[in-house]
Length: 297
Image (cartoon, rainbow, N blue to C red; front, side, top):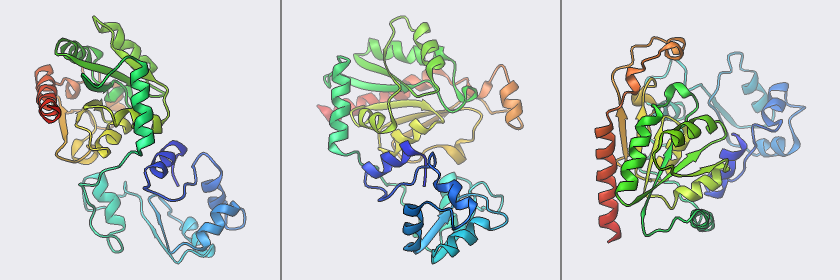
């Protein structure tokens, strides 16, 4: 049970068999009690051996409903709980199920189906992008503008890529229109832009990209899950807890965040934690693109 777009992606990549979108009444019907549960969900749960709920259920209402519907075993705990012993969010999620699931495999790679990757390649070709040049995707947004670097930083990267025979491609999600526009405004030579794609189409595009640069966002985690070389730019959120993992991921930060709580983050004007040195970012790009060129030779 997850958002529809995430579920479609996971199902297309053979990570899950069945999806019950949160946008439907699936969760609401469960919270209402066993009788109102939607028939497909109720029938599926009646055959379920184990249900894992990463959410708060302090009065055990959801637990009781699931057991009444026939679920053999229910494990429930929020990964935000202070009872968690580990730091990284992945470890906190896995900690919940450590008695029934082996330790997580951090070398796991999500595989995009060939037809989805081919559709992504065709979409890039429609923009005039060919595989003769290395392609670098940049995502200037995130779930909050307070986690985003100044557009001038990414504009420097765009200019460097253009000067070094690489193709910068700006990706924008449903809430990124303003950040994409601000980046394009400060670029001397505006880059190509792809916006308003569904998540599965974005995965198809990323399957044809050589490097991804983004903030603490869902797209950054998607790029890392695809084992795409990823540069993750972190500021007020702690990379020890939230950064994607893997040798293919480079995490860059500015100065230490001085804000105590998210209200302080929203009120912070100078944002020292997001003052990431452009030299370090360009070096990460140069190193990755050099490695890619060696592979493609």
